[in-house]
Image (cartoon, rainbow, N blue to C red):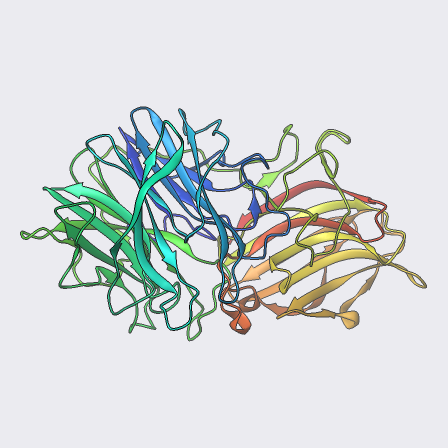
Length: 523
């Protein structure tokens, strides 16, 4: 059996693809760089992270992008020896307008390099490229409609793509309006038994999320909706362990079995809050005699475990819990905020065996932060580092951060007070209100180095510090991890908690901090 979710932590909008005996998933990365997380599997149970697709600013420039903007809903496809990847870069997401750009990149190998992007359109998000049997290619995306007295989610539209001229051509046609669930987006088209099947997400990303199927004898429609829609949803089942289920993508295995990936969330009991963000789960599916897709275990609720396919097990080596920063480049598990890891602010060679971060802008910046983080993937874990740092001013600080966005974060940092010397304490932001836990602050003048630790136990986060790695003391009060959630304070974000290392020097002198290691222990 396969346990859900298969990709824990912030991994939403999974695009699911099989090429021969290999399976791939692409997930949204929003404002984090590099863009588009890619995973590989041979058996659907075991997944390995492979190089991100968008690794150059010529492919993805996120400076100034809003939080929970950036890369939305990538879509993988494959045709005649070429991988195709579509993605939306959202430049503005709040209010009536959506400023966004849909792009296409290609590669002969899933590990890259991926091409320079081809601009497609800006009419809506969630683009998908369908390769028809006659060789034509078609772009589908949801249509955003900002006009008064119109539905914002204006249905699924389609236009032909010319790969020789690398542009869209011909008329734009609306092929599906959606159901009474509303908020229709996330299209995928596949063909079976003479039908074109259109799988869409509906209901938004929260408690009403769902996956709905429709079909037609013709790609351009008209489409008939599954009379028993939706295929899957958790609306009306608020106590179920997997919530917000929807945005499905389906694949047929080489042995003729059908599986669907989908978004899910695991909130704290009695709440909508989940600091791990939206994750990816997998469901076994079957077909009815009259040609409609169903969850194999029956019903519409996603299963907590799914039967494994008839494929040989193919596990991958586990990632070490501790990273000593001995490699010449950052590990694939790390991402940086909006900007690439460049020598101007990050180095693994200036002091061998250490990650050196040069302090730059504040935790509230949308431009040039010095932050290296990974996804929080477990409700119970311990993170730790050892830091060498010599701040000289209160505008210089460095340490361990648990970061959702500039509105919500927890930060264990070392800084320098003008009158009292070096201090170690916790600062945080909740719904944009910055606060300092002065009562729990430590006087660390004279400490030779700084061991920093954070322990997460379900909803509780506690920071610790030590001058020698042996004698530890708690720093600050116990913190509520529910703050670092999509729906905390009504903000409706789309990401999840990232945890790691950062440095700021708001004076602009780029005071550096050196980190000896970073460990992430489960349990």
